Length: 308
Image 1 (cartoon, one colour):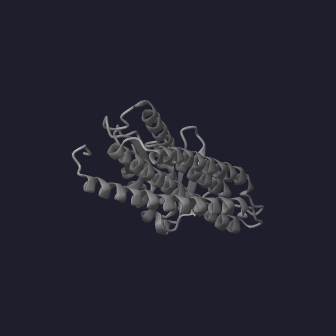
Image 2: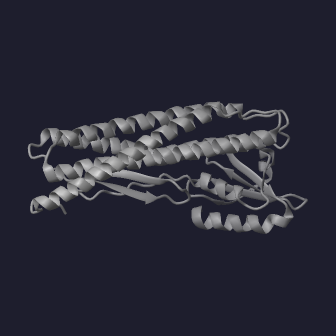
Image 3: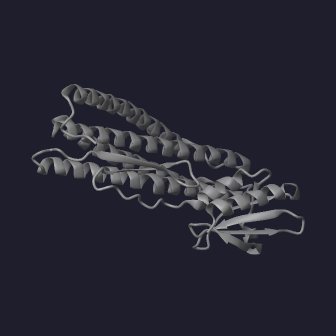
């Protein structure tokens, strides 16, 4: 805990370390902003449509990589801004109100708003471009899967990261309001909470006052995307036509309500589908008999990790 008993030399050392953290976090934020802008431009100009479905599949995979890269950039921007806000508030607890601390908190709020605007623009672009994922030679209707995967990726990143940026913006605004209203300026420092989310590689973050102890918010559930990623990685799995969904029967449900359905056709090819609670198909794939064991193992892992 920070209190008034710190000697001046100790106080000075801590402040110096906090300033170094704030500067390094600022470098990270600036670099990730540039990276996010480059990725957004790549997503805007990447060709998606083609006369051949296999070229579309390759281009869509590149789009998915762009979305994941942008989500990682947005995550790091949020974490960097959180560190800056934490440093500003901790310095305020040591020194009382300062113009530098107030300016930094204001910059953090502006930074979160800019980052959200960048992501909204990227998400709008990607959703709009999904209609371009098409081919005249799509005999297996696999492009439906690709369009769905792109939408799932964007929506999952939005659900994981944007609430953290909103919380950071609100916490920074609240800290500025307290600084303006309290004569002492001895506000409790903000603290950053970072936790991993099940079934994904994106961390959620939140910034709250250290007093009272912050409550941990419920994590957004994106089980469908996590399951689709696992299925895609299954040895021998190919994307399936959604026309075959009518033959499938439900085996279990994921935490977010997604239905996992499967069937095996007369030639021994096992099909699996992910169906949203609304009834819309999200993903479909199949494996030949030689890879049935691999798919069975994947489904068991999905059920254990993501099932109800």
